Image (cartoon, rainbow, N blue to C red):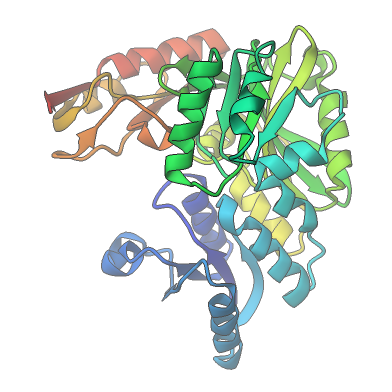
Length: 406
């Protein structure tokens, strides 16, 4: 039997959707992970045939385990990951050991936000940025930003809005820098222009140098302690030709990275200065994104990614065209979760396709400081964006979190 090795996975979302897709395609699933839950609760993850617990930060240990697989007679057709930290290594292994011509060099740049900004410096879609790297001169460098405020400061490996802070002035910037340095004293800090305008997520698949936009997703951003995306909309009325200049900007970004075979997603804003790249990630988006795209267009993007990694041409033809809206659930206050009600009522609302909650009783919940602190979602379908959003919001209003303050 042919095998696919997954480097890491989450328990749900696009990364585990990839495992399910590979299983449906008839492959043996081997998981390399440092998360013991996939061994301890093995019966919950029956799509996985073989779990190997490893130090995923140790490339030599991973390579040793690959040698073990080969000696065991495993016929590995590809290595794949839907997680930022392992995407580059998976593509490199697939290219070199499985002879599948994936483009892996740009993926390493995409995983580091400072490398990405420097690589794309001077491009029309790149906003103002600055790197604060010297602790000796950092205060002077912050004072030099006086004409640029407000700005965003972030760590170079941040994802899911973690370690991303909006600062309005030099004092807030200095406090924010101290906060980031407490987490990682040695890490440089990226300063970026704060941009206003509608924000979109663009799912990209490149096969044999042909760029396909698999989905354009409008994002609804909630601004609290962090910028948290609480709404995602995929709809028939949202397409490249309607968004002037987007196709050309997307093509420029992918061509500048020289991506020939691979996937990624962009977060991009339409500003009064044109389209500006917020960030690029070397994988498809996580969370409910795979499910949204499948409900909207009838193809499974995780499955098509698997096809590409095994050397087959992905099939991204739309089989349907529905409006889908996903609203994410967040806590309004800090406390211990006592109970969640309204799940069944939410599912019964017109247009609602799925209700998912991940918060567990007794868990400490908090207003979100990262995307990982969203506690579920309601996914709905309709004929138009507004109808789908209304259905999702109606469903979300049925769900109540009861919290004991701490």
